Amino acid sequence: MSRTLSSVGTTSGSFWNPSRGPTSRTRTRPGSEGALIVGSGARGPASPVTPCGDNTEGPFEVRMVVRTPTLRRDPVPAPPTRPALRERYERRRTEVVDAAAEVFARQGYHATSMQDLTDATGLAAGGLYHYIGSKAGLLVAICDELMVPLLAAARELRAQELAPEDELRGLVRMWVEHVGRHRAHMLVFQQERHVLEHEPQWRAVRASRKAFEDLLDDVLLRGERAGAFAFGDRRLALLALLGMVNHTPQWFRPRGRLTAEQVADGFVDLLLGVQGR
Image (tube, rainbow, N blue to C red; front, side, top):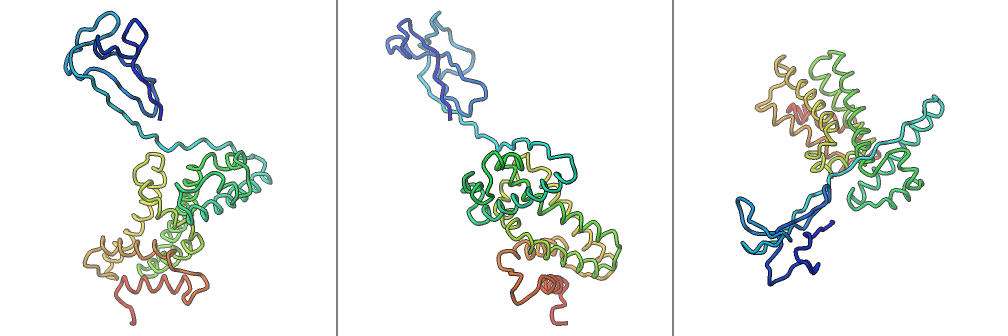
């Protein structure tokens, strides 16, 4: 944090001469993350000052103004245009994002250093910039790899116009399988949810998440209207389903007792109240 003091208020060049009172003139550098503001405590119209900038009216006051820096997402260099090079670039970029997701899931986003990322990806800092642009760019890419294909697959399933229960089961199966394949991505998404909720640069990620939740809610609504589902509170049912699936990576293991499809069907059975039917 940078700190800037007021201009000199005495002819001797010292910061403040007690015999003449505190200075009221201040200078700060625009755009600094923080500035130390020194001046008179008087309020209202400015008090008269001497030609050298002294002001003897009002108590001496120091105020610290801290501006919290926002997370910057640096631009990513343009990928190659030739098909063969582009395919190789995209494959390597996916490997970089997947490796970063594993590190973020294990250590946390803020605790992960650029050195950790270079060790995990095998790239120098310049190589990371070539594929991603910044550490913040990696976090965005992790969320995009999780949400973009999930939303696209859900929309394709929605377009098939299946019966309500078939559509719900198909959607939850696809969802659980996708989360199982992107376990680290989902853990990072959950861990950094507080960041995604507020920072403006995450607007696209929030939009994808909301679009998926709206689509899921529409499936439940259509089932209600068709008489296939009976929820006392559809919103509560939606939140319950989101909670069950989103926390699956905390415990699900692909080689465990249940397959992803069995887990998904169990979730739907619980939601519809047909467990053990």
